[in-house]
Amino acid sequence: MIEGPTTAPAAALDLELLRSFHAIAQLGSLAAAASQRHKTVSAVSMQVKRLEDALGSRLLERGSRGMTLTPTGEALLHESRELLNLHDAMVARFTGRGLGGKVRLGLPEDYARELLTGVLPDFIAHHPNVLLEAVTATSGELARKIKRSELALAVLLDRPHSLTGGEPLWQTTPVWVGPRIGRLTDRDSLPLALHEVDCPYRELATETLEKAGKPWHAVFTSTSIHAVENAVEAGLAIGVIDRERVTSSMRELGDEDGLPPLPTCQAQLHFAKRIDANSRLAVEALAVLLRERLVGRGPWRAVR
Image 1: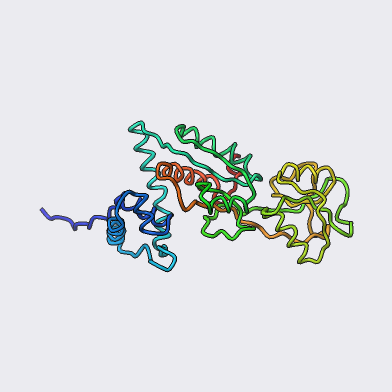
Image 2: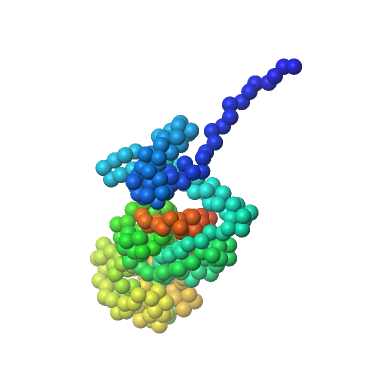
């Protein structure tokens, strides 16, 4: 009998090696990852070496700021997240042991209603033993909270803070709006309804007007997006909101009204540097769901 050519077996990935790799990528150091994984530094280092040998690629580089990902490491981190979560979900389904722990999620108020309606209830239904707490704030305040690890993860816009390393989710569509009746743009100084500081749309509005040399003054300031919208609808002021939030009592404004175009913002997903080990799998599971529902689409598309 003539035997056919043999095929070399494909490299198999050890999930425990992947978990240690994810811990290093998240925490930025071997020591922190070893502490979280309840292993020695040398053991975690050896796990990374075994993973790199299995894949034939360098995954991590040591630098002045700790361990950083190579391009191959970045790709592996992104592509293996869902693998780990699918594995854990399957084990939980067959053994009856679901995910647990506590997850604090930060959200900008502008998008909270859609996320609370269209995404988070599904997560709670699939993981009833996870204590999920959603916190709303401006993107600037959320950035400070995620830096202090007061939140496990957060969805926030890419301004007015300096936080880096977020995963892109979707592009926002900020627009100028005024009341349906009346022309507030004819005034010498534009009356604005604004959020407090730390709001990306406040920054967009004021910076864009100042670059265009258009005088403005704040007639209404609030931390509530609903209050800002009410001020616009009542004819008190002009504002900047996401196009999806424009109501029948508003009118979108633009070039014909003498207003300069607004740049877009990017909504991003950020993780805390320190996440409790008992909650990490739940945090990752929620991140998978957020990516699945929001990447390239945004929250309104997710609920339709």
